[in-house]
Image (cartoon, rainbow, N blue to C red; front, side):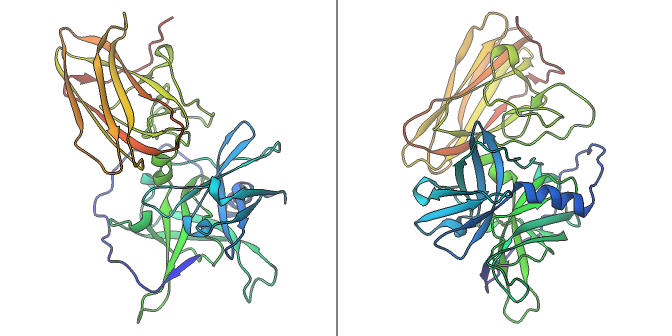
Length: 382
């Protein structure tokens, strides 16, 4: 846990999006703890130690999220999984996420480990019960080299000014060594990452801070959460621009014209990384008139990486032109294109990111103009 004696000025969020939730059944704290033990890993190395959470499995490669301050010292780190097996990771192969206190680690294993199920952290409100887990360092109550600790509490404050990504203050007591561990909701789904404790001079008690998981979803390709639905429906576009289903199946990153994602909103949010080629298709309908398409991107590249968008006729795949934006270090002026649509018709939107040798990442937003009409279901072209 990273402790500080200086509390930054924070404003409590005054507007919270109201979305009709699905009917859910809360698990007991014991059941959530059983899930936490499966997805939580212990990290040790040049620093005193921290915690991480498995968020993705691709083949024999597992992706772990932790705090950057846990692994910001050069050297070799050890990831210990719930079965006691240990895996070595060199700091040169770790990736810091831009602008936040988060890092990505990967290890390879032929063992089967369960990645955490991800939930939309925007649905977390003040007063929501959350559970936190991690591997605390030795203390008066922990006489071993490291001790697993599980804590239940509530979200006390949602911060409008999220310095280093820390957007929540919660009542869970987080001990040193638990930084980077999971914050889980009452269904055992990952909604945040432990990370910081702040004691204000002259003020009793300690504030414990966490980073909402949506920060990770926006910056790391392939990590998704299911969209919150008010009724059963076919696959739709989730906030990170990937396919979303009501169930927890693993969804491939790329789609094709025949598996296009039916848009229910005129906004698409997505993430990109230059270590993998990304190609996504979305289907929607446009009324006659000028369809305004706006693309805005942001990333951590010292150079630039092209994110491109094409609007295609769904029947004959005729292109209405290519829209692209260079994703640089700072958000630039959005790229805008007006496309004349002569008659009401079904369209496809193709989003492409080309892979390059060096790894950069970021996110994008695509906004479709007033002629946009949502599609209620997928229409596969055979």
